[in-house]
Length: 240
Image 1 (tube, rainbow, N blue to C red):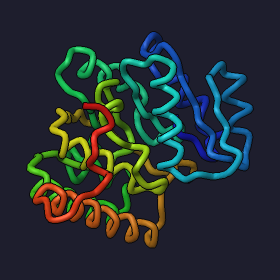
Image 2 (cartoon, rainbow, N blue to C red):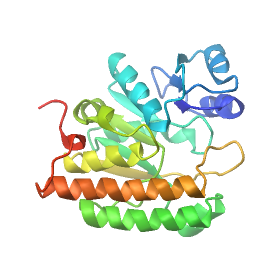
Image 3 (cartoon, rainbow, N blue to C red):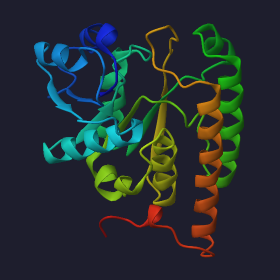
Image 4 (cartoon, rainbow, N blue to C red):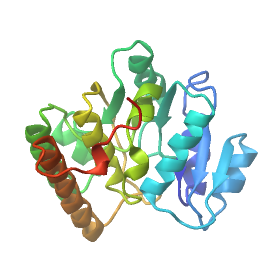
């Protein structure tokens, strides 16, 4: 759980994860200004607190590095803001455990009506659709969305992908998927309803535009690297 100011929703999120779905729940607190870390400790979670805010991508780097050190075979990223339904954790993990996928995404775009009725702002939906079409065309995939924050990774995937070279900002989510496409990892999807409410984390319009432009830049780097016109460390495998 990459966390920032999630005190109000953490317990509800944790209690909604089906019992027995995980051997350990790790929460990385990115210098929250509320009592997120204290509550997480009371709930029995393993807690790591950043002394300063490293950003959403920087938080994920700590999450995945720690999970690998702890011996995790499957890592599920679930935001503790209760935007995504925690009951899907065993289903995300199951597709990896059965060796069907290396990465599984919980997609919010089963239908336009469902996405918008859950509270997704119209501009976010339109950005999502536009970027997903471009990414599918350029990466040769056919995903329904790339922009969900609810995902599962196999140990093999995290050991292969050079995620430590990625951004510390929100575009980390896109960089790691573009890396996965470059290395030929198997990416699957399952549908998830998502809710938007005051306590749920969400970036504003300005940050969304920045994220969109950085996503397009990442896809451009992929195309240049793949065509061997320019090389990027982003696509250098950690282990052969």
